[in-house]
Image (cartoon, rainbow, N blue to C red; front, top):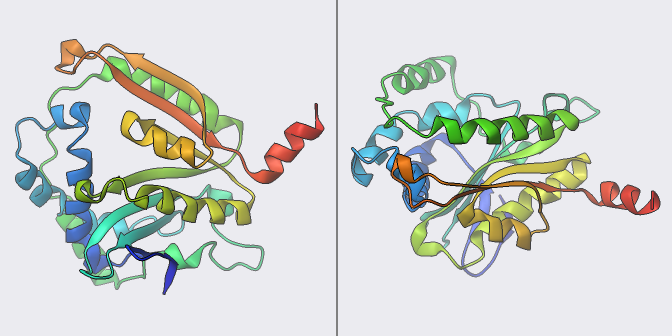
Length: 245
C-alpha cells in the first residue's frame, strides 16, 4: 500500500475521504506564509479551512489523467501530516503499453453521481481573496511560462506539511517519492517555490533557474517577497550536459 515508510510516517496514495483532513493540513501549512495569509486577512484559519474543504473532493477526483497525489501519515495516530500534488505533462500520462503512468498516485475513481455532487459543492465556495499584488505576479508568470515552454516537465504543483510536523524530513521524502517516478518517466521537474520550500528543494537537488525578491510592502507584506523557479534535471539530462563539454 505504501511507497515509502519510516518510524515516523508512511507515504501512500490519497482517497476522497481524506478531503477534510487534507484541507486542514494544507491550509494550516500555507497560513504560515505571510503573503498568502494577507490575501485572507478577513478570515480566521478555521473559517478558511471550513470554506476550502468544500472544493477538496473535486480537486482530488478531477483531472485524474494528469494529477498525482500522495500523503504522509503518522502511523501511530493515523493523522495526515503532509501532502504533495504532481502534474504530469499531457503526453506522459500513460506508458507505452497504454496503462496510466504512476497509477499508485492516481486517486481512485468515483461514480458520475458523486463526481457531479463534488463539482456542485466546489461551486458553492466563497472565493474572495483581498485585492492582491498582481503587478508582482506578472514577471514571475512570464518567466515561468518561458521555462515550461522549453520542454515537457513533471510539475511539483503543491507541497504542504503540517506545521507541528516540520523538521522531520517529511517534505523531502514526499518530493523524493515523486523524483523517483520522474526518473522512470525520463522527465525533469519544475517547481514554483516560495521561501519556505527552497531549502527542501535544494536538499533534493533542485537548482534555481530564476529568482525574484520583490518589495511587497505596499500590499501589506514585510517588504521582501521571495520566489524561486526551480528545476531538477534527470540523470540522463545531466549526463548529456557533461558529454557536451
